Length: 57
Image 1 (cartoon, helix red, strand yellow):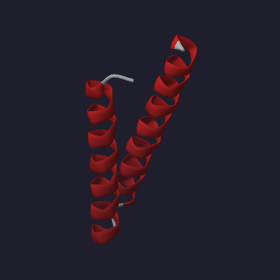
Image 2 (cartoon, helix red, strand yellow):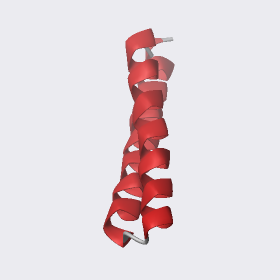
Image 3 (cartoon, rainbow, N blue to C red):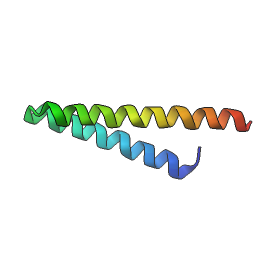
Image 4 (cartoon, one colour):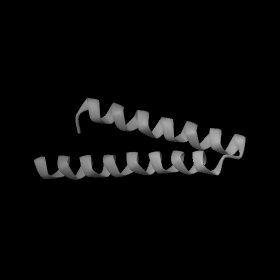
């Protein structure tokens, strides 16, 4: 996994957590769900990159 990919995924994860927290704080279920989706996307990207790294070895 490249450094750029790691940073990008971490930013997506942090952004998702912030969006989820904002949605919870404001009672906006849509924003909260978007935040959770952003975090899930980040996790999937990490998993894909880990699989790619495993096959490179």
